[in-house]
Image (cartoon, rainbow, N blue to C red; front, side, top):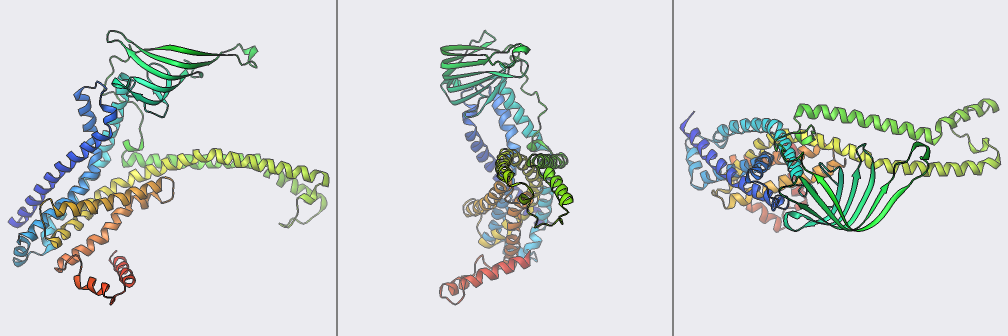
Length: 491
């Protein structure tokens, strides 16, 4: 390796690692701010909070590494141009492509490393993070309660929903709804209360949930001979105490893992199997629903009846045959009323099953997006380098000032385009594969154009061309069309 190659690599690696540390620190602080409501005031050990942040950091690298590559490449080549080092390289026979060669090899290696990281480390870290939060919820019931939705409290066999949590350790609850599950899995008890409070003693294994100003409802199990009766109890209370046995939770292993695996915890191989399984299951569900609708609609009976009428009357079977005319006039109104009722019932069934199909398709789309994100992350490291390196040579500015502004602007464009398209892809508005790749493919022609302009010693924008546009000598519409033509040819 030549001395100049080592120098370029050393400057880039210095900018890369320094930028990575700064950006990772910023993203970690932002993540802590997002989870501050769940972590603060819960009495958690520093070690547990540290584990939570460590498990969260691998997922942050999917945002930090592409931005770091973009920023480091702009800073490195911007410094070379600003200090006329790049001019000295050219005088020595080093073109821009030759100067970029060792870094391109490095970026290819970084892309391979990021694919391995996203395929192996990140799924494992996501699983660890989910299990840690689940185990914290066992020790701290208030931590496991999310406002506005039902939450299962381990050890109590209850699902609880609260409107708000407040006070020290969020022990006070507002507008509480509880569904209590019996040992045989049935939910026969519903409790509503205006306020609630978790009361515990350090020396006791019993956690008390004190409810105030509420209502209590319970179905009573009857003997088999009285199944047609539905006895129940209903009462109002000013204060009701529920005891939760925590004796089995005192020795919770914070590193224990459960068998639940989500799409964020899977590698490419597992995602392929999950996608095939979900796709086949969705097809089976659609076929089953189609058969159910066909039976309920009476189409099969109608076709059979129509064939019988055709044979009896020797009427040719054509599409112009009026079915109603084959029945007596007295029954035609009844047939129309029954048809209207059946159609209304079928529409109601379709509307009721539609959210279920939507969730299934959304789950399938999320699996596909997460799979292709692993490949786009690896490729983005190479493409963003080809955007940042020539851009730094063009703007001729190093340091953390202008390069930081330019890098953040480009990265936000790259990130938000991907974010918006993926949100549309979840409900099927855009194909998941297109949504995963579109932001990276947008940066590809930009990298080609910038590399070509930097190689030709051209600026980012031709000033004379802009002046011609403002003077009306060049049509802006034709200019945009020509730009798109160039991009298409380059791609």
